[in-house]
Length: 511
Image (tube, rainbow, N blue to C red; front, side, top):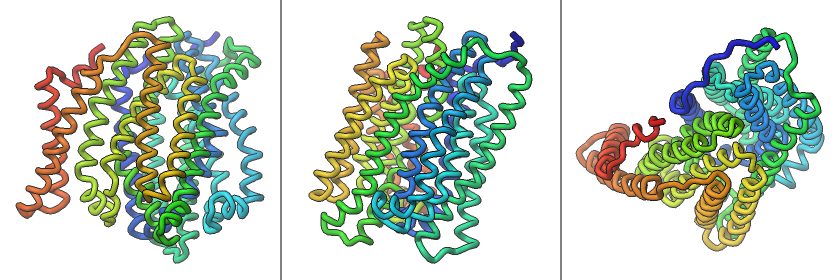
């Protein structure tokens, strides 16, 4: 077999740091076009866009999500065995499977778009955006599957650079389309946002395809995985993940469609309900999701690393890597979420010119933190080959969240959805933690992993809130008061952790 020379796999810390930078850049440019949408189009357009996105997520979960995980896992296993020639067949099989799943779904969306818009999404104005979704999803699948193979073999720089370029192009396209065309009708504004996604996906999928084909030309023989076995392995990994993602997105889509209707039953008008919905899902939750760039980066780097350790029988290293990942989330992400929550109303006004963006941000921060821990634990279960158990937890918690939302929202308003989001997020985290302990062995130091960073983050958040208002009373502008408050909060957090005998960066970087 002709072996293609490959660089050694970078460390988990360096890979996560690199991908976090990409994620932060993506969040920054994502906020640019969200701010542009909020200011140029308004909350009603954001609400329509949020109605279209669940359809995007449902189709993506069927066509892409499971196959992307399967391609990453199998590519990592081939890389660990130095079977580099098998990488081409793995990617090709994933792309063929994605195209076969995409074609019938695209036909349904194209021919039944009006029925989907009216009867499933609950608003006929989403039809234009729906018609643009199939080509966006096809290119997204081509991009994601090839990107996951690069991540699986430890090649981070190219897909990371493509990701940044895609985010820059997406933000520029959406802003230019809204500014130049100035759509007066909300449905056309929402469709232009989807069109901006299409332009950015053309760029990213094209660059990654060229890079993968150039790499594959350097290998002249087929890999050692027989085609039948390769298809069976892909299906065994992809089906539970796809089913989980599909069910979760269907329940999320149902929740998104139902929330405006449930708010009307609570007593709001249709316009007020759509605005409340747009503020919560288009402003408040994205504000809290800023630190999740680190979690997404960690998951991308973690799955191939854990898969390699498990495939080589290195379970001690597997447990150490998993514990380090959980500590990284608790030491980095949780305090950042706490600091954002402390300044929520003021950040919402500053970024979106919408004071309602900070409403309910404190309880939502708890649910977001639990979701970040759940993501890392689910990644560990996927690396262990326990996709079915992870799927069962996700389905149970998703069903419970939907039920609680339907029951509580007509009585409590949007606070009903918030309560369901927080409660089921905490439950899912606890259940996944139990499964990881059962199948991987070992245990987490609860004080070092949870109690110490939570206490330090709470102290920092309280002082940030106090410091921000002192700065405002002293005459500083909102921007400088926010920057100063967050900087002071990070210093207080670091000192509080050091007083408890913990140095976060040393713990994360230690082998």
